Length: 110
Image (cartoon, rainbow, N blue to C red; front, side, top):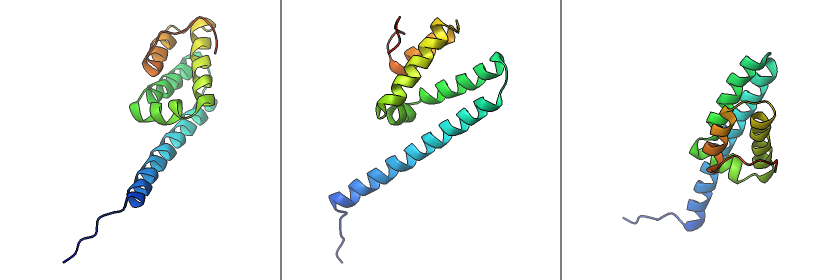
C-alpha cells in the first residue's frame, strides 16, 4: 500500500485558500459594519458602530489581514482614530489606537 504525501505546491495552495477565505470574511464583516454606520443617526449610535469596527479590527486575524496587508486602509484607520481623538474629543479612540497599532496615538495625522 503506498501513501502519497502532499506536495509543497499543494500545501501552499491550501494555505493560500485559507488566507483568502479569512480575508473574504474580514472584508465582508467590515462592509456590514460600514453599511450599518450609514443607517445610524446621531453621535451615540455611530459611536456604538465605531466600537464594533475597532474591536473587530483589533482581533489578531483582521489586524493581520486588513491593517498589515493594506497600507491605504491602515492609514485611513490611523487617521480616523486620530481625528476622533483630537477633533471629536472621543477619548476612547486613544484606547483603540493603542490596541490596534501597539503604540501611543500620535499628535499628527499620517
